[in-house]
Length: 81
Image (tube, rainbow, N blue to C red; front, side, top):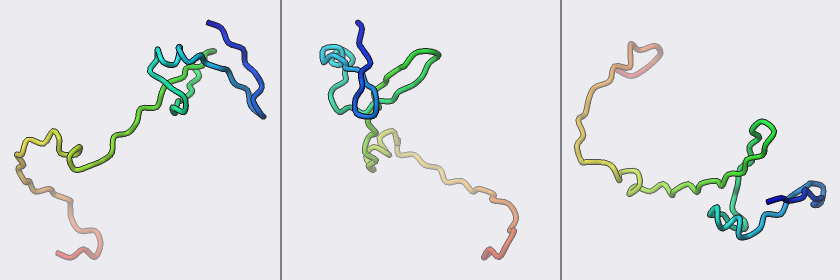
């Protein structure tokens, strides 16, 4: 498939056929990243970040927790002992 680079305002752009985007799982208004690889342009869809919820945070938690003491070293300032 070929496309022509055309003036688009103060920039240049190419048109990507809808069928081509659909085959790649992309659609209008998707956020993409552009990468230069040697003399080529690579376009990749930005993956949506999942909402950070307690359910997502603890989904792999098996319920076991063993508390352990951690040595932060000697006091170096006016820490309360």
